[in-house]
Length: 60
Image 1 (cartoon, rainbow, N blue to C red):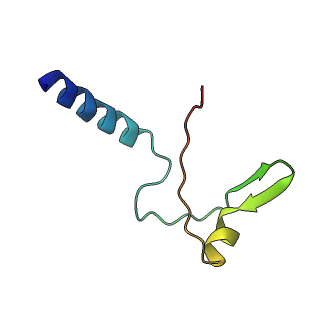
Image 2 (image 1 turned 30 degrees about the vertical axis):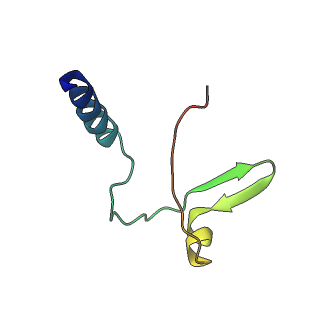
């Protein structure tokens, strides 16, 4: 049990060290990306009232 808690704590600290933006940070540069030919802009999504959750991870 102690090893599991320690592992979870280490993972949380490790992931927080590599964050691009922190909670509450103002994003000054527009971040854009393209998926299947459709271009998305972070500012445009937020301006349209959509909630944006950003997750960089691996699927395999």
